[in-house]
Length: 139
Image 1: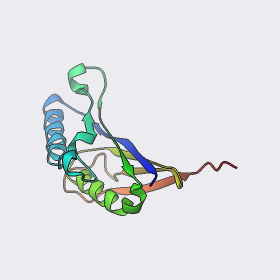
Image 2: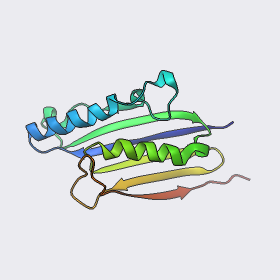
Image 3: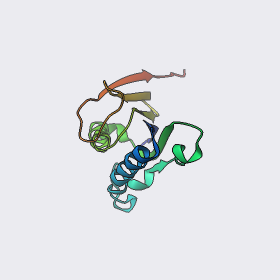
């Protein structure tokens, strides 16, 4: 079976220090509630890595959570992966989320989640996803 690579990021805008702390705590609680990679789940807490706190750096106003993992032909379970990822997103604060799926035979797919509001609040259903596909064929 061919290897598939999944990676991306979840972005959240930070406001004041108190609001940012609450949002960050909520998002990290969701990530920490995921199963350990030892149990071979599609999504695990170890695949997520929050960046240093933007508000603490007094420089930028966007928090970024990076994630990534390799799988054996995840495209066969991609609908399940998407459902599990959307479940994670439903519990978090975010402005946008991007997932890149790289496969040997099906090319590269980019999935972007957006919200109709300024940001997504936990347990809100105001999110939509779009997909872009690129495939380079070699002869």
